[in-house]
Length: 488
Image 1 (cartoon, one colour):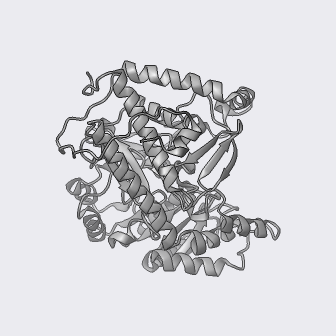
Image 2: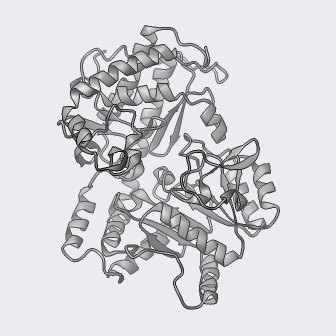
Image 3: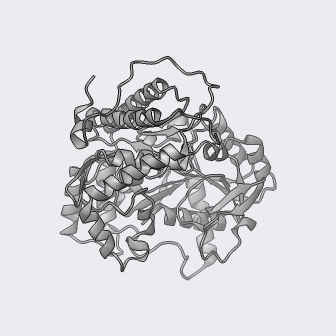
């Protein structure tokens, strides 16, 4: 069988063998990794090739001395590259770098461009609004409509806008603490809710500790945040038992530590426990919006007290929203009145600006359609099935996890049920090799955990090229040496 046309066009012939439909590996088959020396050698080859093929990116990286850490945001250094890849154009499911090389983009701005880069409906809405004004600290004419659209889609009655999900989580936590008179927060180990001090924690030997690498923190949030394992109902019940927890802030499925899906019945138990203890349930669906047009929770019948959605909710524009139930809104209103005159400390001048309203309207009315999600989820399902075939053909008992339009390869025989299990199965060196190998062949995946996200303009050809890229890398590793157990 010939290599897929997109794969061979972007790089070179010799994509490696394409395997027939294989037998299924048993669930308890041992997880196998490749020799670190082989992985390192192949990475060095790919890094050298990246340097040769990207002279203009190299020149721009050398010139960027006035950016701290070399980039406008130091996270841009998280890609496993010798130097950053500079973008000239991003359109639909494609990115073109400054050296003129095209990429099928499965990272999509780490979800910000989940509906594609600059989709026409969004671009036109923003173009029209730019001519009419950007920010006035007054509501736009379409504000009422956007509020109605949010309530109808997500089932919560009252909404506010922030510029990022980090801010939305921060503001909402302030509101909930004021409304309940409680200070304690519960989160799950491995969570990520943006640049929010209260959630920069982890579970170590059963105790809540600050996350390593946290800079400049002045408050010991371990006194007011409790961490429990995801999918652990008993630990959750124990954390809520004192009756002092204002809120549980969580994703309905973990995405930052590697994807961890909820066990059967866990979300229903989470909802029941929070209600029993008078605790507000806040869901952060910034990443799990990939699950469907209403996110993950409503599809599972889970109605939270509050909801946060960022990144993709306005097509990638700096915008996030948070919604609350009528009951919580009434308690927030009471707390606001009790505080008297003065600033709440909640909100920023650019929140709810005219451009955000235009982007939200375009996203909610056109981009978040059932047709778009059917296409995205269908391609993710195809990719997951094909990747499982490739893994079994290489006799690798790794797991493929899918969350709607998002799919991840995990180096474990069984799907992880906790962040600890996900971390234990992770092979950072192998993961960075896969990312660089794919990038050198015109395929971008998320620069951690090798996640692939589909958008409405992703094509089957691009998905097949991604499968062949994975297959080719594994074939090269296998040809260089026999896989061995971790630590071998």
